[in-house]
Length: 69
Length: 454
Ligand SMILES: Cc1cc2nc3c(=O)[nH]c(=O)nc-3n(C[C@H](O)[C@H](O)[C@H](O)COP(=O)(O)OP(=O)(O)OC[C@H]3O[C@@H](n4cnc5c(N)ncnc54)[C@H](O)[C@@H]3O)c2cc1C
Ligand code: SF4
Image (cartoon, rainbow over all chains, first blue to last red; front, side, top):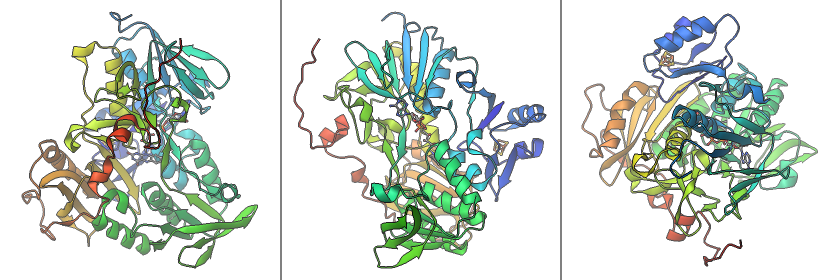
């Protein structure tokens, strides 16, 4: 599974970093950095983070065109 | 076909952010015909903003920025093959491998590529890089891992500044060469440019403004660079960050309004042909597109922003499968973000479309502020530095053409309420003569009517 964050929308509320700290982290006061490939075992946490994001900035899904490689 | 917009064959050229988002939107809107995505890069769609951030910081490897996909696209992917032309009469896309892909509607989403170093022999030196693709990011990250003694970044726009920031975080010695008076001046003007210069120096960057790199030196391998002020440095890595070139050459014979400035389209993403006649079966979206924006006096804008690629792709897809009266315009307020030197920079509107700027909240001293830009007495943009939560408010001011300078907000004290010149390139330069504006071509071509052969 992959994740992308719309950082135009993200308001740095850091809910995601709290719920899935291995995937989302704040860099400095309000820049969010994230790991686009969700590690095994973190998927449930990432789904919860996506649901909890107050501005719905997190998109989780199968890697695009994965079958096309 | 005309009555069945949800049927037929749709081909998307450019399998990156805009191409993927358009494909998803087409299916979401009920398009049930055949869908083909053509991309010259071998990998499926990936995200570029992390390439100059997470990837150069060493958090994520370059092959790991793949984009997630919403739902099943049921698409044919033709990756690793370049489109080399469009036959507008027979409605076929021509591929480099000799294949031809017929379409009923076409979306052009070929984006841009990094502008190469102008001297090919110097550009070929080992150690000279550009950063646009995941492949380029991988090679650069590997070289940074190896611990170069000094990195030279040529150009201090957003990409160059982010690269310099990542290098400093890795503890590498960095020289930044910028032709303008300060970093980010071309995009944000003089006030924030001065702040960016201060920050870079505070983070140990050897920042040289008002100079150009006149030569990259080396014998097979890069060893150093010479500057226009007569100085030189030793460096074993140079990153050329001189902006982007639009991928439109493949459309040269297509009869479309495609040139160095992009593919010109209307507010509904329908491409114009070279005479300014709108097509109804060819659309454009993302970094390659150039479109009229009503908030900015209908000037033709091409925006190299992530959010624009997403929004424009969704509008293009909607309009590809809906009849005229149901079509929607691409009106979203431009927005982008950048993170560098520990700061979160976000922008709404078009800062270069301005004559004045005022620090409306916070202060330059604390590097925590909102700068609001105005053009002829109305608010046209706002840029926040570590103060992103306020931006929404200013976005509304932009959308409603509120007067500039804005009334003081309740939130913060104001450092300097007096607007100062924004020191951006003349806003009138956003657009050019009518020929160029409409067709995307440079004025060296004379326009005459050509009758296509059958
Ligand atoms: C290093 C970097 C950092 C960035 N950071 C930010 C940021 O922080 N914030 C922000 O808002 N934006 C940022 N951007 C900009 C953002 O990534 C772009 O706006 C976005 O990628 C545009 O998407 P696109 O699909 O229009 O074009 P592109 O992503 O350029 O994709 C076009 C695709 O088409 C392919 N192609 C080109 N010609 C052909 C052809 N003839 N045949 C087949 N395929 C072809 C290309 O190879 C490419 O894969 C950054 C960009 C880069 C490079
Ligand atoms: S929860 Fe949402 S808004 Fe908050 S930091 Fe994460 S992505 Fe950003």
